[in-house]
Length: 172
Ligand SMILES: Cc1cc2nc3c(=O)[nH]c(=O)nc-3n(C[C@H](O)[C@H](O)[C@H](O)COP(=O)(O)O)c2cc1C
Image (cartoon, rainbow, N blue to C red; front, side, top):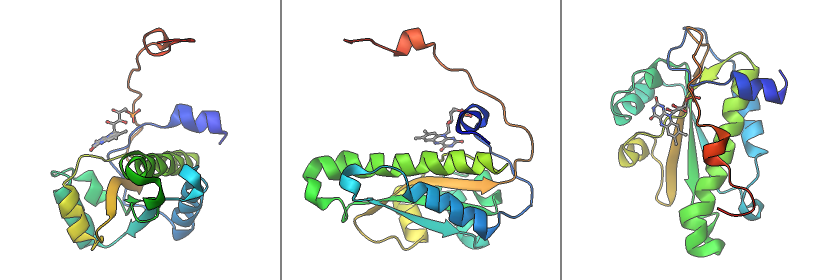
């Protein structure tokens, strides 16, 4: 699938078949994530691949009962690494590591679409609970849960604001 087609095809997928996601696909998604840009190329992001059923159940609970987190065969948890960005001070800790993580998330989302899989960027969760479930150390923040699987049904496209409302030229 071409990049533009992936971007246009991608929608949030919140129900999955029982079909597994091959480890090869997960590894390739992670390779794409690692290729994303990052501040100073410090790559202040880490990834946790979760397949364990009990862990996924606990993640779904930490995500305020979003059951599809548990139903996906695999969940990639993208984390911001504050240790790796520490030379950039407050801006690094409050902004760059989140942007580094977000860039990686989007690469994963687009890659899985290109392979016929689906995902959803899950950001609503109790951060402390997710850290507890996955033994995430201090200075590492889970930023997004990405449940990945074969879509159960075709996702639908949500609307977008018109460019005329969003785009400013030369000045705000
Ligand atoms: C930062 C962020 C957090 C999100 N958190 C959740 C979430 O917790 N649960 C969920 O179902 N979708 C979540 N989404 C997905 C959005 O609801 C979705 O991207 C948006 O409605 C547009 O739909 P689309 O992805 O199908 O284009 C999140 C998206 C982003 C970017």
